[in-house]
Image 1: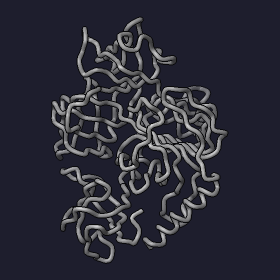
Image 2: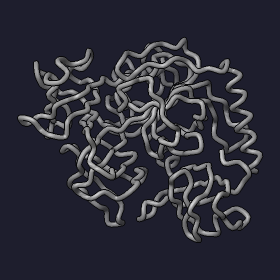
Image 3: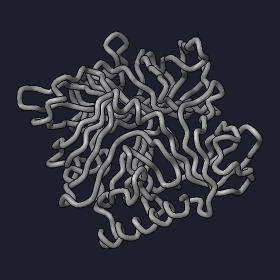
Image 4: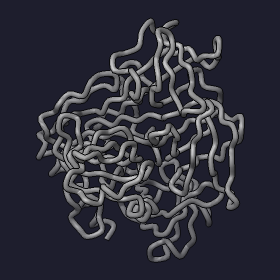
Length: 400
């Protein structure tokens, strides 16, 4: 079965490539307005839920030929290795049209042309709170509250004073829900914050949660704010680690923009940041969404996590389907890894940098696992050691 699924996946990717003429649509930078691509292909924005290619919003994107971009790069032409993409990272993917799954239970596939990823906070952690079961409850970075939950990938449990990088979602009040947290091995040269602008003056822009707004001095190094960085805009700010006269001195400010404005197939997963108005317009993670005709959208609440699918038209996601938080909760419990085993023991193994806890009973046909075996791992949740808990492991011939 595993071999059949692998060949089905590879064949699907070939068909997708042929269908898109061997090339992906053009892309735009985060610091520029989106440019229409003629509507062909797909776009998705959400957390990575699987590796070996990447799975985002229930689509498995092949990334071997994709341009991998990091929002920290000032040079937009830079490209990174696909190995930098980790579970829980928030990514935008632009690619070919999606090919439906060929067999029941399989994941739809597409080929990515561009993948862009970036964190929302970089800096020292404080006020780390732990749940009774030992999992992370919350912390603060730059005095901003960051909540964690069962879906949050915690690579290593942080302590107050650790330098961390947070990937996640941002609600309308500026509170973050982490999708991944990494503890950095050394102090970063530059801090970072993504947030909504509450106000701006001729020297400062104010970003963050209402009770702990951070003053960002943009004039000293940048001279002026970029276009579109006014009140309510969502911006990305990089700044010096040293406060000067009570403010952070910005070295770079970017206004958030999606990779594309027009595409046939689009999906966004995020928090509801604006409820539907009388015309059916709402926002999910800052993205304008038209849910006219989807009656279930009227029962949403601010801060609820949803996934919306449809098409992008002039920067507005015209919704055809909406999944509620409870539906996502069921789906989010599953994580997929495709790759080669390393560091295998009787209780753990590592696939694509992820440590997996397993028992012999979850290995198909009671196979004995060895370093170098190609496997497909299905996991559900994490234990107190931040290890993915395997519920099924299949051994096959392909590591893709």
